[in-house]
Length: 620
Image (cartoon, rainbow, N blue to C red; front, side, top):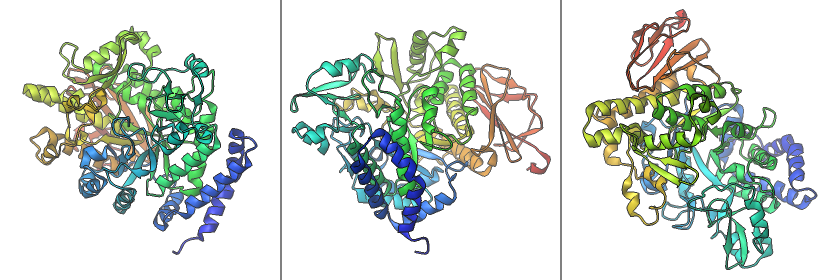
């Protein structure tokens, strides 16, 4: 190879970060020099194991550190089995993925996990093995290599809070090996676990109540924050940090470009606290960022922090000491579905205003739907000004989006319904929640037109936000809920499988037929992707602001970057609206090329407009 000597490259990166690495490590693990030296040796070993092609990609991305911040990345989230059966099947579908305009592929958990006790792949029994029915680690590396050849980045979940009870460490802990029991939280009796319960909230109060489980084989109580078969790791033990970081870097060395840190706020536990978002969590994430900067600086860390904005933003770290490159824009997703149900944009306007005020260095992953449920973590202090109390409002949202509310065309199902607290989360595909499923079943053409407009409008709105937009596989063709999960004993208790159905390849064949719902959505989304990629106003560095539409049913977003200005309008209401755009300049419709009358912009219910400003030298 023609680039730098590998030893020198590693040493230069290590020296750049050595002081902070050592200081953070010693803060978490004071006096444990042996563990620190083990960490350094591990980093060098993982660097040496990295392929030349991946090292070349690292060097390229080091030169262009903002490679993921532009306006040309579009993601797609998928379960390998549901999409194409196996990893080899996904390789064979890369032409389709490219046709969808996708260049960021998020593969849902695919590492080895026990059937029936996997929580959808989030109970990992071996971080170095792929679930056998999906293929092998070599298949994953081959898929990543093919993706890189097409300019597609690969994202993979890294389940860091816990292992499966079938993991080798857990088996050895059950057998009585003290060194492995110390990798988890294991207690001789219930005294300490009960003290934890006093301050630690429950994640799944109905399906998995409590935070600890008695293990008969070990005759110990084990901390299990999520499900009884998921044993929480003790990151106060440096062996856990070193070995889990090595597992993460091993996956990076298979060609994974983006590591999704699953449930990251939970990874440090301390008695007397909520065991959420503790300061040590940020030290751990920063250490993992430093590990990547040294071994594989082309890799991004994506934090999964499903909490209110004040808890989410700190996971970006600081400009000097960044933690995650990207975070999920989870509050915006929940606020969006609130707006679909209420037809009132005031909360969304308020929430987006807060997002737009954040530093432009912060990168969000934007999505309408993901593999998980929709939790109603809304700003109830703000909603209270409009008479919307938390419990009755959550009930309304769930009633509307499950179709129980009179006249609602939405179709979803509840997840973890807790009648005692008046709380529940929501499941369903984008199309079914927009009313496509109901309209097609009822043969209601007018309703179908409205539902498809709403579906496409929501995608346009997602593409208008700064960050990386991510489609849930099947959304590009309006895939509906899959109710067959009710008949599967391994899935029936988990309503999230409602939107985790197999890819409908028969429906995908209709994507080029403009008379079908599949064709209308596919063509519409492709047009949006193409326009976004070709106009610099969508760049992550753009100025973004809320545009006053004078109407609580219509959201307005303005963007400006390098001489391009865009005004985007989204009609969430059930009636046609005429909007006056209070912005300087004349405009034309970016989708049609037609001149726009900014004093009377017509919007059908569920419709949107992208209006580009006609600055003299930029006039098309």
